[in-house]
Image 1: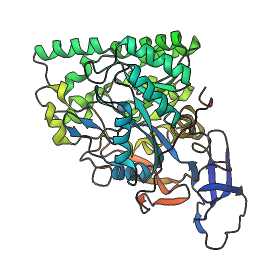
Image 2: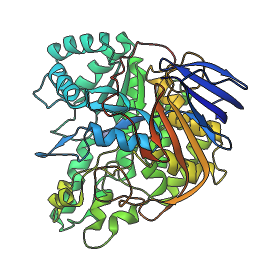
Image 3: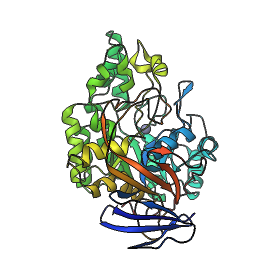
Length: 461
Ligand SMILES: [Zn+2]
């Protein structure tokens, strides 16, 4: 399909100008003034609107088995919601069970996504056990284009790995040149604090945060960064939530450790008081690391302003209110997750850009360009230039709306930002030149999303 987007104000991480964009065969083939529409081309008038590169969510859980149930979205609903919010590529996590082989888990995730995804996507490969057999499979998986790993320092006895396994993972990652994502919380401390609180009769969702205080996350972050320092591997701290952990990551960066930091829209906009809501409503706001204080939120915003935080993620993991009930009377059993992939971009725009806190270029950088660079998707994804995939977002900054579960596209019965005002709307969203969204609604073709195989590059370094 030939697509011509006319007169939009093109915004990338480092440029801003008004021009027309011609897309042919799925790629951007010309950027110029006054391009005449080729015969049969679809023309989109973007006058008075921004044109952003498609946004990239580096952290989602679309397919997620948990305690005998599954997170509510599937690849059709999850990628539809992502597209309505301007996200054209997402990176999901393949998480093998403790006794499962990585290749078998990858196969499971691929079966869930292929022919169903409406946006492009790729995977981080989680390592929940490390031995010689796993290592051999990981080498094949990396060679096949899945070039990032994920480890959990938390979740003792479930997904968590010990330090020997972590060390071997990082050595392998350094050898292969892949990035290692890490969930940084000290597992032993979490387990001990959970038990202590529970034994004291503190069982409600409001006790989730005190069971994983900032010290626990800061310790996990420091631990991971020091392991990176020793092995020379490239690391990525996922969902960093607080000032104390940011300090550890920044100190590591200053020592020359090759570590990137991701923070989430939830941690920027919601504080711990949400998990204190009565009648178990607080369970909707339980995730790990937990929601923190206003002071921590300010530190994260400052991290984005100054470039100390590299990327904006969602950690989308939707469990509905019925599934959250599994943890009534025991906060340890509340399924962790706050749905947010649809609202990540627009809420950051609303509270970051529209308030003047973060400029347009930084916004594009953290929500698209940096994720593409760090995870070997750049420059096919993450920018607007000749030869890049025609993943584009025509954004109307004058639109004002209200977030609500009644109108969102995620397959979950609540929205953590319910009732909040949102500035701007994704008028047109394209995936490789295919118009998937118009006026904020999905109008495209289902199942066209591709699994992106990623060649190793040095772009993230
Ligand atoms: Zn996650």
